[in-house]
Image (tube, rainbow, N blue to C red; front, side):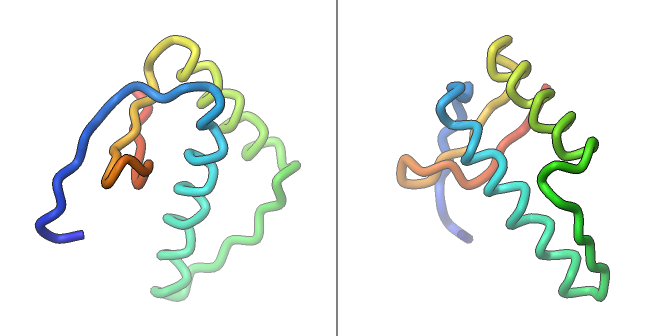
Length: 77
């Protein structure tokens, strides 16, 4: 995405699946250096992380980075 411009805005609850997908994609980068994680969606860490993101969205504390109006990254404050 070199040369791309980004827009940042607070996330909406209906966009929680975007945050999950972005996080899943970023986790795949670890496999490129030989670190493999097999954590099921029902694992307590995953469930707690998604709940934390849901709460952050409701508080306006999860922000998406958008490229061409599509979420490509996010940050939780």
